[in-house]
Every structure is written in structure tokens, then in C-alpha cells.
Image 1 (cartoon, rainbow, N blue to C red):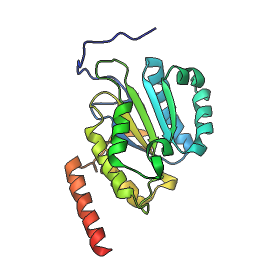
Image 2 (spheres, rainbow, N blue to C red; image 1 turned 45 degrees about the horizontal axis):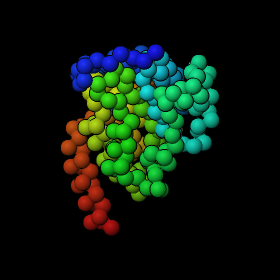
Image 3 (cartoon, rainbow, N blue to C red; image 1 turned 135 degrees about the horizontal axis):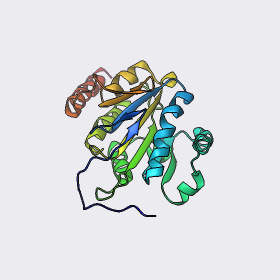
Image 4 (cartoon, helix red, strand yellow; image 1 turned 135 degrees about the vertical axis):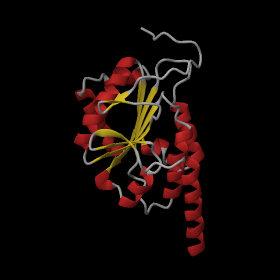
Length: 220
């Protein structure tokens, strides 16, 4: 059965719940987990609820995580093959999205996320979840990645689609965590959703990032 469509651009908030909390207008979230068990305890209900509502679900992860991820989805009662055939579920490698052609490009990645977002005139939305702990602080492209994380706040529509950036704390440096915290208005920590007190406005963070890049080049 197809979902009814409201008038175009109604601007109505779309209810989304994650970790037992109803989200407000901010839908760009960084989620820190200590292990896979904690991650799936939070994420599986969010994913399953979205698919049941007709939302589109896109997951981005390391290739070696794919088999276990699909197993976890199936264990939650999700018809993985059926949802993939219907185009409601897409599981991508980080190399398909973040690191296409072996490098990270801010504009390309923002465009890729925009293409994943739902049309404004539809009730169904997109729920995007991507693992990002691969972007370690010692990775040469980390500053471009941080720019992307900041600019994503201008791309993710308020009160609609939800983008969750996933970080395995056992694989993420403290320096990267500190920077990432400043680019997300909402955070999941300890399995709970919080408004992020460390978040700073996009242009302020980007100005600081430009200063950091300039200092790095001057010291090279």
C-alpha cells in the first residue's frame, strides 16, 4: 500500500524517535557507542520503526561489517532482502560514499547526502546512519571531513530526515571526538539522547577550522 502524500512543502514536523526520545527540529546526531551491542540496542528500533512507517533507510559502514549488520537487521525481524528489493533499505560501504576514488571530497559527499534525503512533498523520510570512526585525527583528510560534518547542518532539513553519525569509541581518538562534538547539535551517549552543549554554529566552527589549516600550512 502506498503512503498518501500531503500538499507540497507542508513544513509539518515528522515525528522520529530514537533511544526512547522524540526528536525536535535538530536531526543531525553524533552517536558514540562503547561496543556493537550498545549500538544495535539503540539503532535497531530506530531502523525497524522507520521501515515500518515506509521511511527509507541508508546505512554506511566498513565492508567487513556488512555481513554482521545484515544479520543484526534480520534478527530484529526486518525482511532485509525484501526491503532492499523495494528500495527502502540500502547498505553501502564507506568506500562507496565517503572515500569514493580513494579520497574524501566535501562537496561530493554533501551532494551524495542530499540525494539520499526525501522529497519535501512526501510523508516518508530518510533515515541515514553512517560509521565515521575511520576518519582518525592523524588521517590527512580529517579537516575536510570535519568541514563536511559542520556543513551537514545546513543540508539536513529541520524536523524531517535524520542523519546519525556513528562512532565506535574504542576506535575513535579523543581529539576527533572533541572536534565532532562541536559539529552536532544532538548527541547520543550512554544510550541516551542529549542536546549537545559543545555544539557551535557552523560558520564559527568553519572559521576556526580555516585558522587551523592556515597554522598547519605555516608550520609545514
